Length: 553
Image (cartoon, rainbow, N blue to C red; front, side):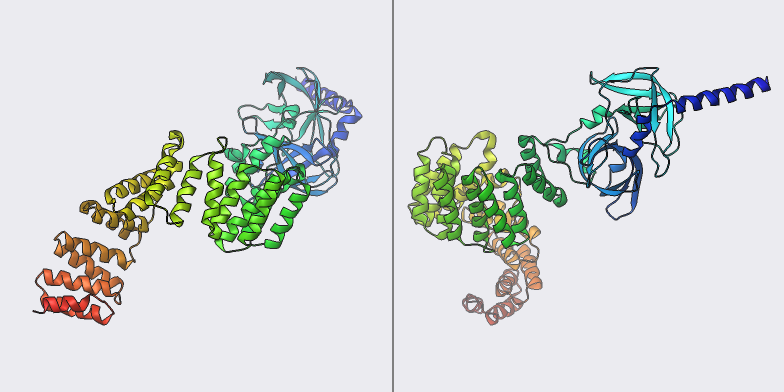
């Protein structure tokens, strides 16, 4: 029996060797396209290692996905020892744990099978090696279809150690899939290489949780609409590396579109690289198919930085806006002209343009009415006219986009305040606070508190000045305002505590000592109160002497 077993093993080994030797020459040739993959974390430490295979001569490659999750950098080393960096992630699929990417160099690709292998067919696993890569023969155990046209292969074999990601090839040397270890058996699996090669990122990929785990930039889609969407997503994201990469890729793919140049110039301007930003926009104007759009983008950028006082002038911005309008007389470009005139202080010219635009039913919108109100306010027009424009702006805002009306309510509140309609002002201040979801500062609560006091809404006023103090606990003005209000509503004990805190925060603030003195006098501490009134006088208070005279009798 023992002798028979030995003979059987020898025979089986001989058959396996013969089977391996029977491999077509093209099978081993596929080893030229196999590489090792190593990924690294952001701190440079080793993350993972695997293998893959080139499927294009411009650096296109496929491998398993897992090594990339959490990676900031990745490198590959091919069968000749050439080392290259992974520059772009072209597509991933976490369900099948596969990835498609690009490296920075020319590559020798293996052909990808277009015809599926079937159960029982001979295939070969081609491993990675710098000198003599191992080629292991096996048979397809079974095949499962997915997505109607792709194949998931199962092989009944024990794979060599450290061979994950290595390709299985058919008798023509074509890659049918990449080796994946089974989690439940000794079998090995392979996802269809044609499926992996088909993977592409799209405009929404930057929001995908798996893509977000990969620090390597995503390849720009070849479809211009998808590419434009990705560019927008990248601009809104927090990963500056991916934003810069997306911008550069967009320009390379679509050199006659304005989007990429505009984004690059914005990046350069944000870094105060003014000369670079100017050169980028000049290139955009020269190359772009839509010259008007290029001039408009340049004008918009100039305007924003001119208003902030960082660079460019409003006249330069206006010249570019005029150029845009000459190229194509669009209302959008007139609107920018109006905004620039307003920033220059030419309110009448700004208003004239806005009134003209309001007649254009295709462009008329609530913002134009709001801006007309701002112009009229600057021109000292009757307040009733300003209120009427703000009413129209609010009433014509789509209820589904009512948050856009927040500045209209704030502006109307300020006009009501000036008109002495304090309760109307408070109502609009409150609606503004609601529309911005409470994202207001201490100054807002102080301003609303002032209107509430004038409108005799004292409890609301106390609440608001307390909120201002919470948001700005080192601002003495707010403590003084609260102490003053507490005295006004006959809460001298509370006023005493508040005013004392005010003098602790700002010992040289005369208003704090003035109010502390008044609170002390009202709580029957006249001597201390007069002393604090005198201190307020010494610090420059204009009211202190009259109060000293009043309470010294």
